[in-house]
Length: 305
View 1 (cartoon, one colour):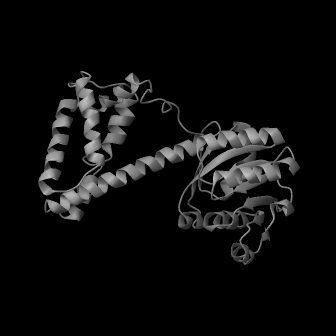
View 2 (cartoon, one colour; view 1 turned 30 degrees about the horizontal axis):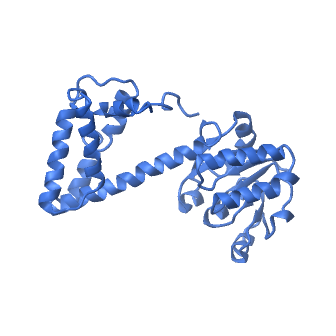
View 3 (cartoon, helix red, strand yellow; view 1 turned 45 degrees about the vertical axis):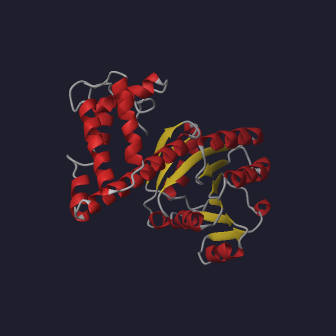
């Protein structure tokens, strides 16, 4: 909870997510100065006690914390350039908009020019989760700056996970989303194959979600235990994994089910065999990335705070 002085936090962008951030801040004892050019969004915000709205960023009051929830990196940069010169040195921008890590670096350089600070706080939640207070923030930035902003971060999330320097929170979100989106393609392909093969959807879901037999083990066992430690002896060899993958491709062809992601993955096992890794556990495909100059476990040895 904020103290009884009712500290004011600025929230720029009162869209679906930004408005819920503002409401959470009010719920946890802050007063909010919300800014949005859209009169309809301001009208929605005005329904809540504790939120004062502004159409023009130049009219916003001074604040130690400015939360950005905006539709594009260009708009975030414009706000930083607009507000930065007139804010005090204690001000921290909290970027919750989804931007790239390189955008955060550029924002950091702009903030340095104006004597203010910034952290990235990527939101891992939908609007309903934010509304329910279940959002998780993936945070990057200078530890002292994060600590300064921490009470505000805690006020609109249930957990704050610090990944490293500026941009690392956004990088983590981008990577997480990339995995989720790629898996969605794989799941749809697998579902189409299962349906065409006469397997009930519920039965297939039971198999895939089984903690010991399904999709968990490639992450929790093969990546977490093998790739991180470079332990590729024993286990299911790449030659056997490639054989099973080939059978899946053959099944899809026979069922006339178009597949893309599963087929693309086959080429990685082909390359691993050609590289002489046939007898190693199939997690040894990670060695290919080491050969290509990108250690497969790089960045995973540390534990987020």
